[in-house]
Length: 113
Image (cartoon, rainbow, N blue to C red):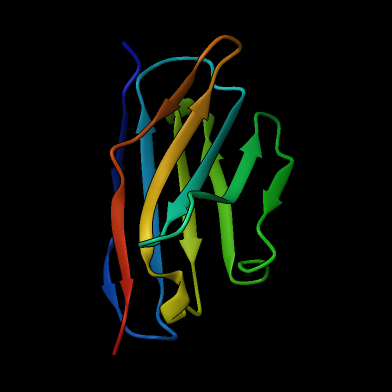
């Protein structure tokens, strides 16, 4: 059974940085990415990375967030810099194979002074 285990969330002041990690049980993930959901809002794509390198970012995080993956460890990372209060949300890891779509349990990121 595929599992995604997230870590790295927490409380940070505006302008600070956090790094999220998501480790997947062995599987061939075509796409790995991060979504987020703020209270009262729909879940939205933050960033994704295709096996082989191409990345996609939400306009609101371009230039501040960087997604990367270590295929040997089946792990995807999200480096978040210059965090803003509007980045506050639960962040979910997502991974897709050719036949299935998997989600992590979510990790809270709070940006507040």
